[in-house]
Length: 310
Image (tube, rainbow, N blue to C red):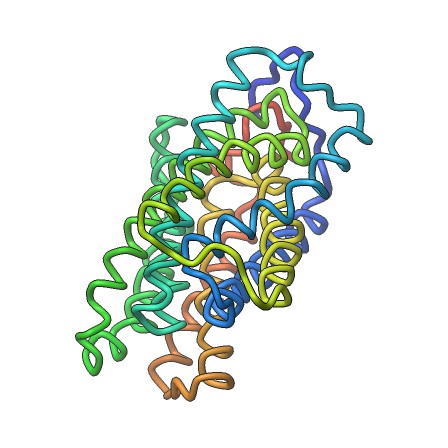
C-alpha cells in the first residue's frame, strides 16, 4: 500500500487510531458546550469570544513553553500561517458567537460546524482523489442527517435565519482555520500551534467587540472561565491534535457530534424539543461515523501529510 509523503522536520507523530478517535469525540463534546457558556455570559458575544481566548492563552503558552517551544525558533512561514489561522479563527468565533444568540442551540452548533462537509471536500481536492464508494456514502448520510437535524427548526422558526447565516459564515472561516492549521501542523506540535493561533486571534476579537459597542468587562467570571477551559483548552487542543493524525474526512464528519450534543443541551436547558426526525438525523450521522472508521485501510482516506497509514 502506498504511504503518505513524509517531510523532513515534520513534528507529526503517529498516534494510535483509538487515541485519535477518543480525542475527536471528547474534543467535539467539549466544544458543543460553547454555546451554552456564551448564552450564560454577561458580556457581549464577541467579548465572550475574546475572553475565551484571553483566559486560555496563559495556560496554553505555559504548556507550549514547557514542551520546549520557543517562538523565535519557529520558521517565519509557519508563523505567518498560524497568524492567518488566528485571524480566520477570530472571524469564526465573532460571527458564531453573535449567531448563537440569534438562533437555536441545535442550529448554532450545526451551521457553525458546516466545516463538517466543507473540510472533507477540501481534503479530496488537495489529494486530487475521489472519495471511495464507502466514503461517498458516509458523506451523503452525514449531509442527510445534518439536513434532518436543522430542517424542523428552520421550518417553525424563520426568525432564526439571520443567526443561521452568521453561523454558516463561521463554519466557512472554521474550515479555512482548519486548512491553515493542518499545514502548520506539518512542522509544529499541537499545543504550540494552538497557543500561537490563540494569541493571534486576541487583537482582532477585542477590536471587533469594541467596534460593536459591546460590554467587555464581565460581572460574573464563571461562564467565561468555563468557556475558556472547556472550549479552548480542552476542546480546541484536542481538535488541533487530531488534525495531525486523522484525515479531513474523519475530522469533518466527527464535527457533527457537536450538533447532536448541542441538541441534547438545548432540549435539557432551553426546552428545544427533540422529536423522531431529530433522532433519525443523529442516527444517520452516527452511521456515517461508523462507515468512515471502517475505511482506514482505503488509500483514498487521505491521511495527513507526514503520517504513514497503517
